[in-house]
Length: 281
Image 1 (cartoon, rainbow, N blue to C red):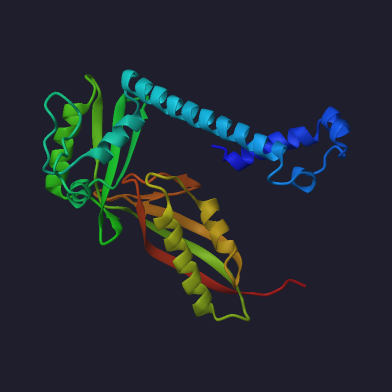
Image 2 (cartoon, rainbow, N blue to C red):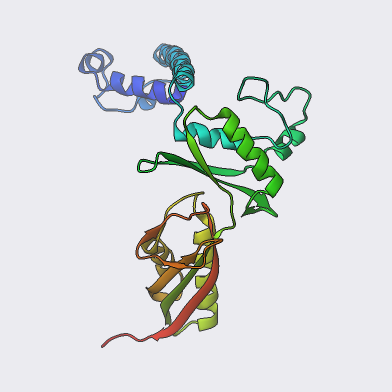
């Protein structure tokens, strides 16, 4: 939303570009308003009053738009985003208000409410082929993403069954992170220590993997781009990337991109081949 100063600036710019006003006031079209008029001039004050009125009107319109969108959200068939938001709204050991999808938090302290919201991350996607809504969730342990405890998962399953639309089939995914492994050739600047460069590469890979949005897409290209800008790295060439999914024995190779089954990943085995970079003559 625009500020009062931005609105006033737009009004003043139009004023200074008006040929009639330029002729009447004797300024050159395109000059800056502040160079020709004082802050306390009647023109400046009038522009401010108009800008303030326009700002109030835009605030009201934005608020009205938000209210309309909220009403539409309530009457429209529930989309995946609604289920994601509801998963995040789940409260451990707290019953729903009868015949609603809401909690009564009257009398609860903010700390109690935060502690009850054990689902810290959630994503909902719908499969067109199977008509199945997959909801991936995760909590936090010591500041890191982690699966919900078994009792929390049981309660969340019952909660989703209670609030879902009739006929909607839900698959809840609450599991350990997908384990990321890769082999990469790093051609490093020989004026730098290979151990130092290796450590930077390892940290960059871990930061990229852990920094992905929940249920965000991993790409080999994005990871290589992160490594190419590191000091001491001349060339980063990916040789192979794979993931292991919790509860599965097979290893999945990543050719270009991958969306974690659990919604998140952690770096497990990083095979980094340090190769001295020699300039070609």
